[in-house]
Amino acid sequence: MPPPDLIVRSEMPEDAACLETLTETVFGPGMRARAAYYLREGVDHEMDLSFVAQYDQKVVGTVRLTKVKWGDDIVLMLGPLAVLQELKGQGIGKALMHRAVTAAGADSGPSVLPAIMLVGDLDYYKTFGFVRISPAKISLPRPADPARILGCELVAGTLDQLSGDVTRFG
Image (cartoon, rainbow, N blue to C red; front, side):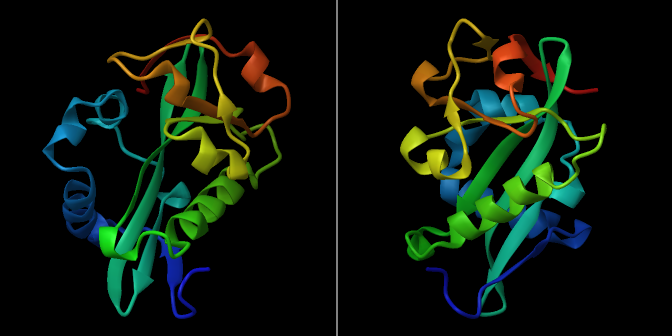
C-alpha cells in the first residue's frame, strides 16, 4: 500500500532534470546500454501518459510511455519505471503503473494505440495485464532477455497481430 500522502500526478516539463537524476540513481550508468533506453533516446515521450510520484514534497518515482514502431504498427513502450530504492516495496511503482496503463487505455476511440510493450519481470507486470511476447514475434535493436519482453493489449486481440522489429518512432 502506498504511503497515504503519496501524490501521483502528470509529469510536467519542469520535472525533466529531476527525473533524469532519479533514473540515473535507480538504474546506474549501464541504463544507456539497454534496448529500451536506445529506443527512447532522442524521442519525446508522451507527456499526457507520463507520471511522477511525490512523497514528502519530493519526486520519488516516475513512469513514462513513449511511442515506438513494432513492425508496421505504432505502440507504446513503457519505461522507465523508477522508484527510489529506499521507498521500494511500498506500492509506489504499482500506483504509477496503474495510472499509466489506465491512462493509455482510457481512449476507446480510433486514436487508441493497440498495445504497450516493455522489458521487465513478468511476475511484477502481469498484475497490470502484461504477458510474455514470443521471441518469434518481436525483435529489439539491442540484446534483451526474451523472457523479459512483455506486452499488454489496449485493444483486444492485437498482441496476436503485432510482429516485427521494434524501432524508434518518428
